[in-house]
Amino acid sequence: MPFPFADVSATPLTDLLSLHGRRAVVTGGARGLGRAIAARLAEAGADVLLGDLELTLAEQAAAELSATHGTHVLATRLDVVDSASVDAAADLAVRELGGLDIWVNNAGVFPAFGALQASDEQWRQVQAVNLDGTFHGARAAARHFAASGGGVIVNVVSTAGFQAPAPGLAAYVASKHAVRGLTKELALELAPLGVRVLGVAPTFVPTEGNLAAAEAGRAQAEAAGIDPDAAGMDVMTHSLIGRLGTPDDIARVVLFAASDLSLIMTGSTLLADAGETI
Image (tube, rainbow, N blue to C red):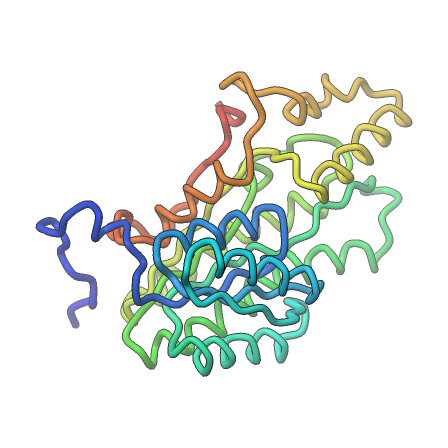
């Protein structure tokens, strides 16, 4: 059977980038990378639902983005570990925005704890948020996409999906390698339904959550008698491009992945890494 992906070679560049008429969900959308991603999607014309555990922050972000970009931006409380919560967010987007075309799995945790000291609960929590949460979102989105003729899923991975960047990140590295693999498998399964699945792997970006995790990681390395920079923590202070990445650096790559500019791509994970993985 032919796959439902059009040839857009004759489409003007501005139309390829435009998301006018499309509806998106961004998990973990209240601040940091999620808010920056939502801002670029809204600027490109998409209506957006921000899902986040912190509803008040999500509502504030939604109001500000809607006023700035003139699109319909909503907020809902979303716990990606709870599949019922994720399904409800997808249903809300369809009901309030009129459909669903883009789903960005951004919500995640970035804890630092040694493998030998980690409890079963710590390990499971990281996998539950980073891996299970991504699967819950992709599944909820794909069920709607299958009924509507297609869509795009973008999974925020990490350079930790390609390497082990520092000590104390066993659970995180395992979860992000798994998300990268999941991206490939979902792309394979969902292509006949008109669904593209891409990953975006950011380098370290100094958001509030990442800064706290970085400090914990450096402290753990020092406590173990390891030079944090020699252990790979230097990526959190400089990069090959002469500065750290910003949330918008990553958001622009997500916009590319979500738009028709990347229509030929599925299953790949794009490295937004400032040269970190060279």
